[in-house]
Length: 256
Length: 269
Image (cartoon, rainbow over all chains, first blue to last red):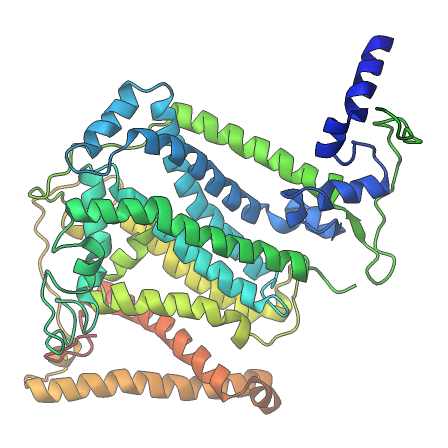
């Protein structure tokens, strides 16, 4: 196998290889640090962490799983976007088309939906764990607030996506889930003190969300844009802040 | 080409670096690569496998096409909002759908600022954080999760209560025996029943705050109250009393069929 080793050596010594990869897999302390600090994805981590923070018993890995679920929905969601039109005439037919005609269409849709549910559950368990270990205590108070914002964004992502299949389940779940907008004090046409601003069914808080008095074509387009562009972008920004602050403050742990 | 010196160690040779146990300040750190990255990688592989198998085996629901003129009975919100939908049984929509969710979000956000207990930062413990943990269990498990379970599994047509072994009967007639508390206590006049209801709700918060103040003093001593400060105390007691109010309204409705404790032409509670 001498020619093989020679070939490998030639490739890894070539200027092209060296321009891309700065270090190999040598298991030395220096290289272990380079592995993390020299990699744009891995350098979300500090290069060294406290021992207990690597234990599943301590972290439950729920924050990571939440992020993984987010990534799964991004990847499967892009696939779904290729075949889906947010127009009331087509949306439901596109779901059927996806289910029966597209290679792996139904698997992608299943995975998108189950990952979305999984993300909601994982983010709750993550929050529960962080509470149990008191990891929101100084200096990480504000990162808990960012986490609460991410929790709300997760629910909004899931809720806006709920409408897109445009089946009975979708429009009625969104109708029921948005009725609170109708009942908002002062701003909703069914809420207390509705007389103050003169709101009505087609001009109140819910109509602003729906683009009309009830769930209709405008709502589908609004929820589609919120679901595919606006909320994912905002979520990504807050995720960046969330991870960055963990990186700066370090993993929580008992005082040494 | 290939003019740079070869690394002294051949590629891939393992140099052992032992995982040290905590020996002193800052001395329990291990390298992220491989210790943490390995755990994350394995976790990712397992979760991805589960997700793929699950998605191959269980299809996401797709019902008949949307029909705005045909309302299903029951109409349920997505499962994660069913706790709030269940609270609609006890409160009007402006409270169950707007005020309470806002209070939940704000309440969660202020947790790190109202909790000044330095103990239990970064490790599991119960004894030194008993009240914080019990409050969180009460809010998360008792209120949020169990109401979702009720809303998902036990509510059928007309939002009536059906046990899992009961058939969902859309024609079930439930006797409307609900009564408002002021009426039950003999108030027949709109004005006085509103005054009574208002006094009751206000009284609940005033009395509750005073009781909580006394309780914290008794439990933790006056010195703690000084450190905690009035802002933190009032915020905590207001949020806590709102949680308790949900439980009280649930019990009143389920046990005594009492719908409102306060009834005015504008808002009911």
